Length: 271
Image (cartoon, rainbow, N blue to C red):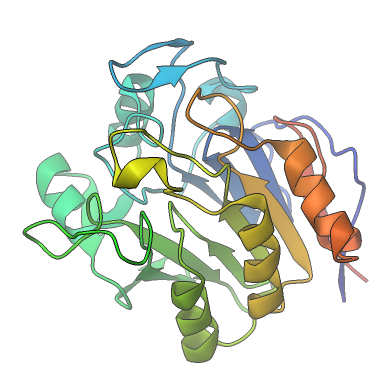
């Protein structure tokens, strides 16, 4: 039985845990599982203006605290709030970047691409690319059939460890249900929320989960442990941790939510 070791967490270091999730800022999350370390959507730049997006806070931990990783899990490469300049440099210095097919073509080595439901084996870890819809249900799609661009999430599975879902920039509960129906319950869900919006896109409607839809996603997945990322550090994030805590409290699911500060590990122990 996996349970949260502490709500406060301990600071991220290069030393790996048996199972821990650490949100560094924005979507950038470190996942330790059974001696492996994975990093999602690296963003290590200081605050700055990207033209149509503004970064307001730098990361709560740097690449020195992350240390070596087995792979970077990149949900998409075209938006700087998920893949900024320093994040790109870090990713391309690692042994492996797992990414959507179109992103992998743009990046080249060490990126390896998969479309939804494709999988990789990384040091005995099965990582499945799962769908993500980066905008509202009625949003127009691009020439390749994607909303905004090709985005994927990830399901990470290792024997005798919690199955973990990392959502990527997904706003759709229909997608979440499809993942649950196809892959079964999820032990730990890392959900990108923040109700991100940009006025020029889809009339300013959310491009990622709102706090309320993050709760619904957790219930659909039957996830007993939930870590919410993508809600701090950028001006276009419209909801933060307080909104998330309120939404989980409103439905009586506070005990599922990890509230460790940015840069601190949410650690699960077995027993």
